Image (cartoon, rainbow, N blue to C red):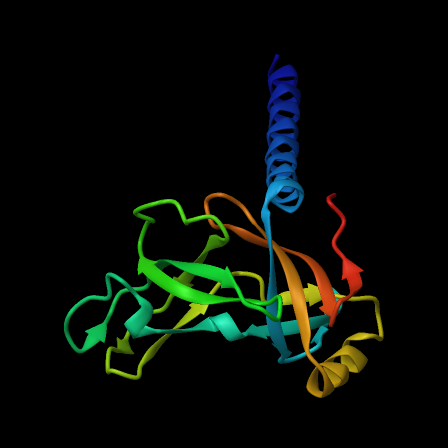
Length: 192
């Protein structure tokens, strides 16, 4: 009798693990398929991961959000708590999306047409001087490329503008769809 219970427990555990992984993959694919597309200008940082291969580590223009654009920035000298921030982006004439405004915590209203809110995390301890800015992590700082191509792409990024095409879900979660060299898609992320 205990052998049957053990087998049943193992099967249930396996089904739960598969369901969880499927839920994660389907959520990412839904963002890539249905999210608002935005083009973000990037700069390289580092191209290698020993376990997963070559990647391009990306830094974004939208990473630094001026405190003066944060509608509900707390009064005082410091922000001491880490937490969510929603950064409102709008498309500029050059095709890249840039910061229009931001709000700490949850959004108060839906963005107007032609703008999108992207969710990030701001770390604590930032000074709130007149020229200060928050450093925001959007969770889209790596793009994996075929083996041996990371360094060449990093070099090219220093010579001409690159960007990523990101899909942003209605809740602000972003996923990288493609790495762009100007108007050319170098690599596109598969849905699954």
